[in-house]
View 1 (cartoon, chains in turn red, yellow):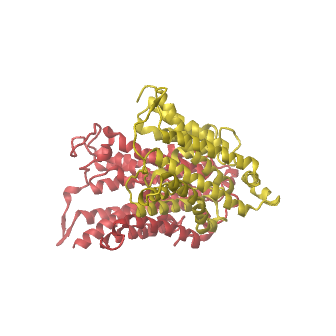
View 2 (tube, each protein chain N blue to C red):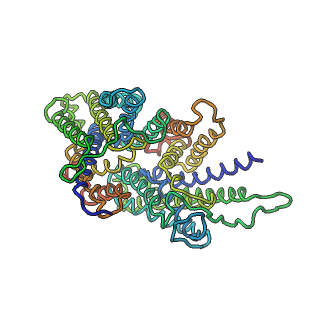
View 3 (spheres, chains in turn orange, cyan):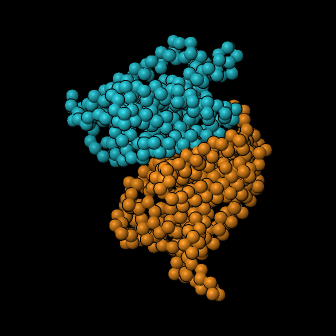
Length: 323
Length: 288
């Protein structure tokens, strides 16, 4: 039974990461944008939804002076919209320039977001974090359905799978729509769609906003499941893991993004069950990240299209000719 | 927030020296290899931690330990190129950037496995800084500024006066043209990693001397370094150094207007202003 609960929790984490990977795949896989601020968008979503749904009176030593008691649904919407806006604002600075400028801006911006979350305790409770975040429909569970008891975790897993499924459908549709085809053209060679009269900067901004918004939604779903959030949940290692998931799964393929996520969450969670008295037991979290880093580089070398990516359509694997 | 104090200018010169060094190394590597090496921050941290290991764990004098740590980063940078980057030479700059981010995570966590994740200090006595002209000045800080100037000067002599340096500048401008004119670009790659690695090691050791050593010290130092590189025009060594000092000074003087915790924001703000107004850098002739 304990294992079942644990597996359900791992499943929920994997589903939330899958949302992040789907958003990242829109950026990198579809559009070729280098986004290193995904953990930042995740944090914006988590904090936005938390602040909107958690009054200042809840929590142990809350230093916050801003907090509302709106329903969770409002929080989710605010989270997605705010993260999308933040994403677009960040992208606005460098979307017209070469890709590596965006990489530098996003890498810096993610650190700044973390700095703000850590320091503005009137808004975010700072390093102490926020507790007692409401769970959606928490009162209805455990639910008796024909002799079975459906616990809250199982309900949330179902909810998450539904959201991942819906996002998958929406994003694959977007990717194969005329909009998505312009994104692919931008990824391959931005001059071509521009020559055809497309405003490529606008398309890139939309792509960036969509992916960042989904990351914000993922952040909100994270905070509402885990009751509590604090700044250490949004470290650059998260962004890096999602990158690895997208590349290992196959950039450009949404199914690949989900498979890659399962792989990464597998490495991250399964190694938690190893006994801690093995050699380097204490260093396991670091060794895990080293392994993910090695996997990322090895896959990029041997199988640039990833597990499920389409080689012909994947710019990441090919010589772009002088960048 | 604080009132103006000439002390801030001194701090600005110290941070400016560190940023300028890091930016110079990063921009040199970019000039020849055409990609942003995100792992550069970890090269800095690794140099500092090697020096720390020799200094504190093996009891070598700091000067010797620092020298070994700094010089070791040259061959290490070349080795990492042979093991990792070399195999991606034909790929696009964006793929190389993603690879470098993978490498940066590997190195940062190797440092954590070997030396632990806590903060460390070199074995130097903690002393009260003597005051000159109303400014508290530590010997370490004087050393940082002087050594940076020596290395910056040395690098420019290398670039201006030696065959290797002239070849580097030629390849940075147009690598095809340089190759046609008989420049051995493969050998040049070795030199640029050697020089870039040593500069990274030096920047890292001095960063550790100025404060503490942490596994993510190099990564955090990247924000102002990026800003300096872009402000100076990516691939332009002189621009990177000028940008580095400009950002160091602005960052330290910014505490007059904003809370100290947000000093790091200045780097991003200047980065963005630079991108929006002069994407080619202060001196206008960037390589991309």
